[in-house]
Image (cartoon, rainbow, N blue to C red; front, side, top):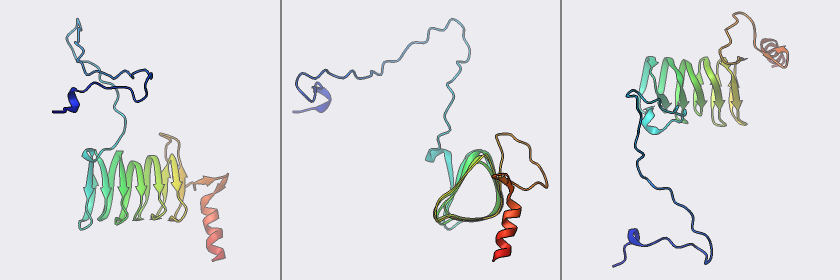
Length: 182
């Protein structure tokens, strides 16, 4: 009977060198000092196990806090504070809240101010009405955005009362000029 696990690997072309396969042999730890071993830093990759989900039929009113990524496909009203994590508003998501996180991705509808320590992404189907404070922002073609943008380098303190500047001009002045034309 043919058993694929017992068959030797042959090169795909005759005369081609056989590729070296990694082996899974455990390496013994011969540390003279007993103590904790420093673990390698874990990359910020969000898997479904590390992500909470608010489903389509859920409605949350109040404050959402935590220490894991959040995917919103339902409705949230109030405030969302997940500093150091990612908040994704799904295509069916409706958020009427201020959101604070490391990274914010908008695929649905958001009304409220967004504060991200890293970046804000508004995708083509996304809609945001509110101010953005972030180090980076991305607005895809087709996305709706109405509000102000304050770009802050990592850890820059907030400057109250000063409008955001884009290309050396105050955003508030540009917004007023656009409203005057309408």
